[in-house]
Image (cartoon, rainbow, N blue to C red; front, side, top):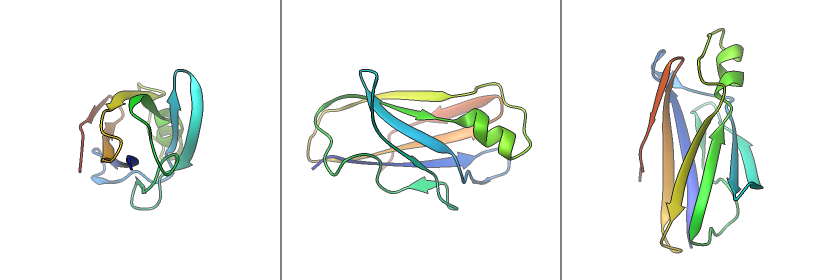
Length: 107
């Protein structure tokens, strides 16, 4: 069954980004949400099984930056991705700084 996890790292501090609110949606419909733990992770985002299709993970980066005393440029980061294999695990990390971000398909 397809599952999803995420991890947010603050590249400015070199530390995990704890307390980042994350929302999973598809076609404008919220499916699930969560908040990163002390290690910057959410081990299971969404239902037990993700059907193949297009999804969006939205990170409240503005809230994180305010909470950590940083001034950030991006109030939200939305990552669109496609689940093609209904049996795979998908890991979508976010590397974050106040003025930039990067993502990739993790393992």
